[in-house]
Image (tube, rainbow, N blue to C red; front, top):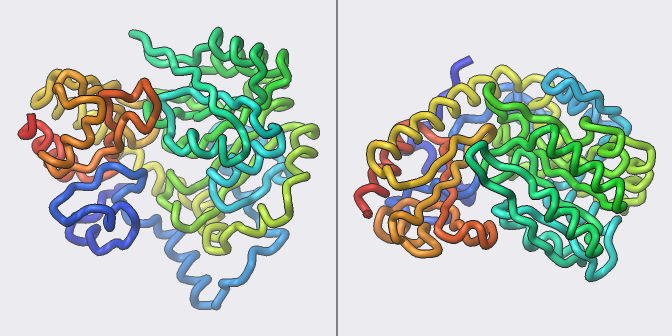
Length: 380
């Protein structure tokens, strides 16, 4: 089905962070919210819930695990036991709570920058200490630094916080890298917590592989945290899942405080079930629109900002832009906002490899994307 972004005049009536953080003359292409209308099956499910005043606490048996299991099986051939699916508020809460199960205060937790900025805060919130092992970037694309990860494990790191597909570069990690990571995790007794929230937005020319699928070692030492929030634009509804693939990890997650599950939003649960059960036609339309936008962005940059580095992502609607050639300093998002009135995500917040970079959200209309690049080009 065809899915098109809402017009800018209509979008500015929204009250979410994306549309209330800056004045109306700024094009907001920073936070990970898309400009597409909500999928009809989700709208219908939420409206029906309001009409029956279904605004209480979530039920213990609620169908969320079965809905995710069905989607994972259809999408990736991943056989998920619904009994190994636990709900909570959002992916960040899932990360903090699962980390608390595996680390002691001060233990090292590995992250792989440039990476989703909250990772830098979630680790200390759980009592851990961040150890950065940056991604490797080469002509062929991105890879995990397996040697660097092993050194961190030898030095005592207890967990890895993996981002797959990786935000901000949009890279679904290869099976080879994931298998190697799982082997290292098994060897050193490390737990891998894999944030897979962008996975449903993988493009046809890329392959996403769920971490827990790649080997017995991955299932034995891994935990998946994910949500329908990014793919269907449901972040404000607050529902995520923690998924395990072995009895050992299932037993670990069962030790979570009961309130972790009770914090799930009833509306988030209803919307997540509708998305995973009935939202794939809409998702297909969105991916088609995003594929066109990632290609359009490449053409616009080539024509108007040829010195800007951009590698088209394999998943998601986020573009990692190398703006160092423009001479806009370590945080070029400041210049983009001041001169061009375009709000981008500051690269330095993604870690030291982000100096001179910015992240751009192209989950918008082609017209807004074209206007944003024109403004940036005029700012040089």
